[in-house]
Length: 309
Image 1 (spheres, rainbow, N blue to C red):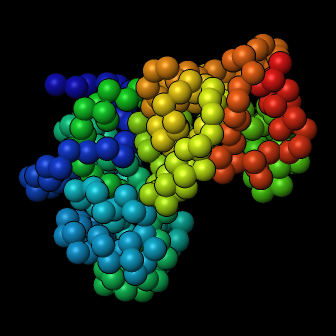
Image 2: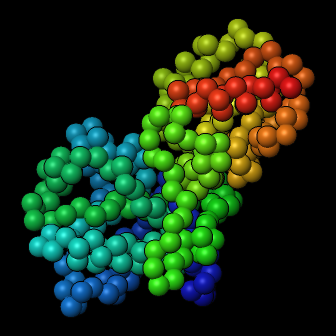
């Protein structure tokens, strides 16, 4: 039997599952733990919509712009709460979500919260959710496959970096703008380490869909190696590069490790260390896929300088 700390330490979000459905008995056990969460004045004004009908999941994707992950996961749980008091709704539902995630881990089920679930009004229409209910969270439930079981946990911030005693102290906050000149290299590095979904090891992002993958193949099929790919993001499209030497350059050890996990020899991953060390001798082709517009000219020049050092 797992103890509480084991459950907390081993919980992780994954996107790869076995085709097996999650047994209804397990779902009921998980929700029986969810309703043990505390609420203000013990109101318990939450509701849980369990979705395992493929047609309903497809409607959420097509009619409500829901996450395409919904199509390949066994079960979804939608957590709603009576919106008579918004602060109470967010608090009560969030506590229930935490219980669901930990309970699922205890029972060997992969559970992940999903924020990009689509447009609220359209989701409510598809699922028949009353107007007075606020949608707080979608949770994916699935039986983890071998890839998910082997994937290490993502890097977590040290508690001291986000702890304040007696009053709020200034801490690092990313610029959160789309202007690349507002970002320093260190801010990009911290953002990639803690926020970029690439650090969720084992997740192949939907952003690199069939159209994008085909585009990469088409553009690169006549290019010569060796290749150097800058800031590989989720790394999945690198598998479509020509079968030649490919190396990648990332900002953090965590993201470089993800790239290593997705690549097949002789492809390698490195971390940008600002020392100007030579990576591979005179790469014939340098790629920066889907990211050039997110880098300031200064940072881009520094990366290219190291690539050609």
